[in-house]
Amino acid sequence: MSRSLTGQRAAPYAEALQAHRDRNGLPFMIPGHSAGQSGGSERLSDFLGERALRLDIPQLVEGIDLGPGNAFSRARTLAAAAWDARTTWFLTNGASQGNRMAVQALRMLGERILVQRSCHSSVYDGLVMSGAEPSYLFPVTDAEHGIAHGVTAAEVERELAEAAAKGDPYSGLVIVSPSYFGVVADIPAIAESCHRHGAALVVDASWGAHFGFHSELPESPTRQGADVVLSSIHKLGGSLTQTAFLHLCEGPFAGKLEPALEAAYRLTESTSLNSLLLASLDIARSELATEGDALAASLAAARELRSLVDRTPGLRIAEPDFLRSAGATEIDPLHVSIDVRGLGVSGPEMKTRLARAAAPVFVEIASPTVIVALIGPRSSPDVSGLVAALVRAGETGAGSNRDSAESELVKRIAAPRPGRGALTPREAYLAPSESVRAAEAVGRVAATMLAAYPPGIPNVVPGEVLTEDTLAYLADISTLPSAYVRGAEDPRFDRVRVLIDQTIS
Ligand SMILES: Cc1ncc(COP(=O)(O)O)c(C=O)c1O
Image (cartoon, rainbow, N blue to C red):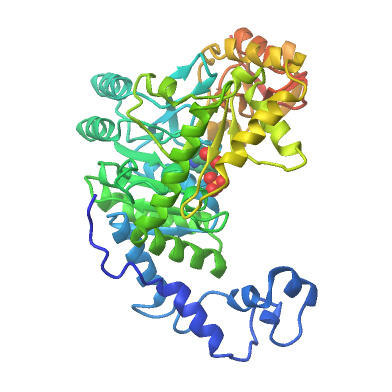
């Protein structure tokens, strides 16, 4: 994990923005808020601060992103070096943009793509945009906690080998690691398998933006053989919301993927990139690459939280359970998963109680059994305050009907296998659709994605045939108080959108 810090203290784009502001030029260009210099909205200025407005400048400005060796291109080079990537794209449309780009680029290598079924919805957007023909790998599910983890290297190998033996290989595989709960998959083994079968590996490492920047953290997939890696820097990397990096790594597909990703970037990005967002990426990269101590503070806070939880009756750290699941190699120390069942409260109920308390506490996620506290870089939050709030929340109104229903959710983790894909997601997206009663939709082709939350693994993807089992499962889920069916036409799952004139027997 030791690497050169050469130049990483600099944040050339952010510094160029500051220098531009200090030149005090007369603004006769967009943005029309005039950077607070010549009138403009006082209200906006009061809300954001004049400083932020004056750093909000358009693209193609001399000294910033214009001409060879400009500050923005130097910032891109430094970001690529920090992750040992060949090329890095600054994204201001979220990691969602990165997934759309990655799938679009994979489609340029070939038609068939293998996808971890629990990927983020933006991967499915990429399937719609690209017209790729997907097959799915189902993640390992955790029946005790009602959550999905990652895919195993053995499953990847089996699926890729089978496709190759049939003479119908995949051009690429898209997986998520770490999971929303911080569980890390065996990237080196999965990458080796992909490359042996001629497939490129895309790792959506949105939740592992900080990986590789401290010896106690898991390694970044950019150094483990992945071809394309997505880092959602706004999640745990310290930049502003909606920012991410997409890294292209050196590897067997880099030459083909580079122009494909550039084309996909142009397809998905605005021509007016937000300078504040870009600068926040530049600064976050510099700090991640050079401030090991800052990450050490976050790691110490996470350790203290775990130790407090261990000493508090009714609470326990759930991570040892996660690590027992097949394919899990490590867990991100900055995701702290706390099992709250011992307090007689479910995870979602606990999350709600914490947020509604007089002194509110906001945690990132809840599963039926756990809440997950995230600790960002350079952050030392009041971990004893969180533990005290958990205990207090456990004492108020424990054991509601809602909670017994939550435990029902865990039992329903084993969803039926989806129906077969009759059309690609793109074909289904473009076809005319209608809303019908769910009870009458068996054999119809789905127009929208339907996913039971938790655990959020899509039960139906556009273009797939709706089966009796899946419809019954989703109807069942929609009756539970803290569960819902994402993509349903109505909360009770009475109606579902299907393609017109497409019934498959
Ligand atoms: C695994 C994963 N990938 C991508 C995204 C999309 O990230 P963004 O909200 O930055 O677009 C998310 C969002 O939470 C996610 O969980």
